[in-house]
Image (cartoon, rainbow, N blue to C red):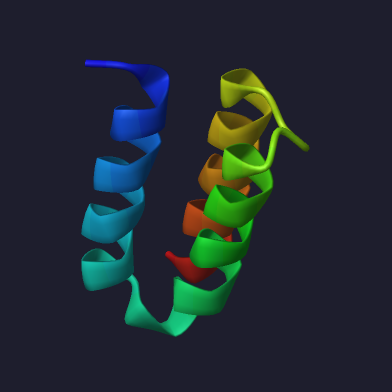
Length: 54
């Protein structure tokens, strides 16, 4: 599975788990999809979003 597929699937799953953070999670996916972030950057930002939501 490519990193792009992982990002898409994990974003979809996380949006279902944390609906209040949907906009932030989708924004991070957008930035990754348009090469503003590396996979590592995307992962770090998503971890921060999850920690704030928990």
